[in-house]
View 1 (cartoon, rainbow, N blue to C red):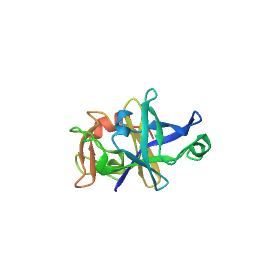
View 2 (cartoon, rainbow, N blue to C red):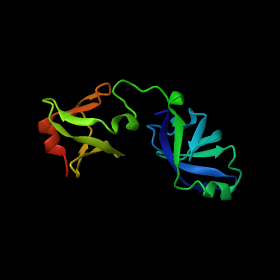
View 3 (cartoon, rainbow, N blue to C red):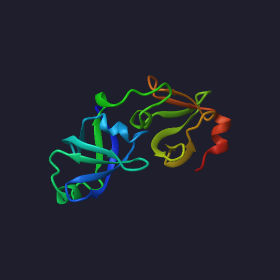
View 4 (cartoon, helix red, strand yellow):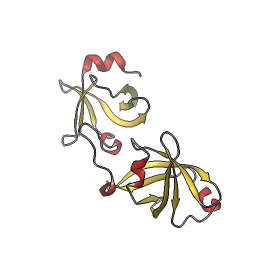
Length: 166
């Protein structure tokens, strides 16, 4: 995938076309590193940026001159080019890379496929198998290995069943 979803437009801010964005990045400042963002496939150059509290930022975008134009972006996803994304540290992954992985035990038992990730105090993964959904926190001790090459997420079976919710 060439683009990553990096946030969602919450609302217009003020009368000059600024938008408030809920960021899906670890740090709101990471959004600024992209330089340009995409909304519904249209590229917008970031003209102004400021942090707006936890997991939020305010953006001024070229082509969004006033509150009316900003209002049309409400609820839309913000995307950035993967090539512009900040480097990840060891053990960190983009959500888009985790979704779709097979969730398996060390013994190779397939528990399901990762279909969704909720960013709470720790990431909560949702897996699905045969129409049944199971949620579990992706914390150390539960997740043993992320193997992007083989498209697998390996979990400790005992710990997984201690913390999962179906």
